[in-house]
Amino acid sequence: MGLRKRLLLLAGTLAVFNLVLWGLPQLAPEVPGRYEGVAGPTSQRPTDSAVRTTAPPLPSGFPSMERPPQITVGDGEPQPITTKYGLTYNIPAGWDNWSDGVAGWDFDDGSSVVFGSLGFYARTECSDGEYTELAMTGMTGRRMTDLVETARIEVERADLIFSGSDEPKKATVTITGPHTFSIGDRPAVRYRATATDIPEAAEKCRSSSATFDVITTPGYASAETVVFVVHAARGVEDALTDSDIDQLISTIRRS
Image (tube, rainbow, N blue to C red; front, side):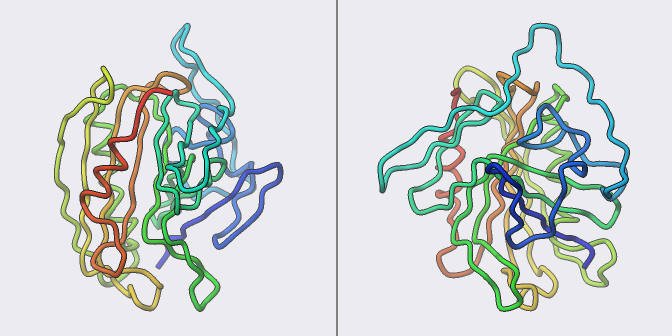
């Protein structure tokens, strides 16, 4: 499968963990800063020689920030993850907090997507040296202002996330939504992609079914629209329930 999941931890220097290293030049175009997320998929698979492009400026007077201060909590307490988009969300105490990391997918069609401000649930090493997790959360920013359209574009990536375009077998993906709700006093939109019969799941150290929840809401800084995702294995021991995912989403709030 051509799909490759990549992960970096940005903490002073770039350390490669279980996924293919992305050099900083490969994160083009950067939107809106160099730490978390990108404006959208690149037109081709990023390479060291890729030409960097300049993202359009934010609207006049729209605030931006580089790296937000993180909140320290005691052992056993939910972990807040603050983002440069002016939003914060919580992950449970037992999760891995990779607030300075980015992770994403490189697709067979040449596009890619990256999320920052990460949380990982039950991340373990597989026998082939790769890593897997029961769930991942993350955020990124987009310059689009249509919440429904933005969320729809993101959730439709599930076809490529769960099975590459060059694979003879495809996962069965069903999309539900849009569902509208509020985060504070601002509108939000939610879509869900449910994937079953994911090909070669056992061989690739993953579950044969999963969900991919996408939430969009206006940003307070650095991007006009914020995209929050929950990628979760389903149908396996200790997998998140729908209530668990709803709880994660309910913690999104203004920083």
